[in-house]
Length: 251
Image (cartoon, helix red, strand yellow):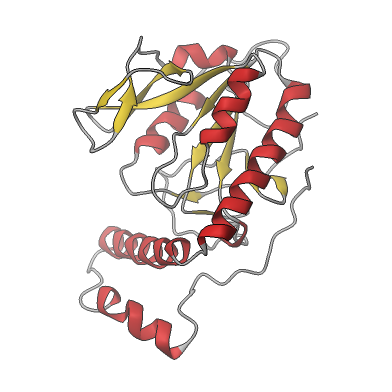
């Protein structure tokens, strides 16, 4: 299942009702910055606060149903197109769309699954994942990560698909993450991979397709996500309803 550039008319302000306005108001008051850089930083944090709250408010059954539909959508789209049979998949935490069943299904289908590892300097490396892989606490984040060989961006010349976390993503392909900048740095590194002669699709280099994983209400219209020159766009997004591409749809 997939569809192309069809976006819901989402509002950037989920605090539409009086009760919600009171709920969020305490975190959105005070000095919002003096310089353009400070103002943008506060805008991003305000936006992040609102959309984190909306994600937490999702009913657990709805979250599980959307995650299951997203898993089926990715498998149905990706497996017939898997060129290298290597995919990089975020390890979901908290209220994010659950990627655990997707990683397991990809592994069982013979796809090598890579997952991100947080490194000093707010950078990512990657390692192979499989069910039951040994994990250890990250030295730079309060999360458990698989133990294994650390792979750099050069390995992504033979990766087909990267599923990227996001709070929201808009029709320009600009996403809002957790604020650490890990994925924007990684996406910038992907942009510098050399183009291969037979590469095709919307990605600007030999890099794999990059796709944000979000819930239905987190796919926004053009220009809603506050951004600057350091924010890197993704090629597409996937929800329970299908894929959306922000450039030419890949074959």
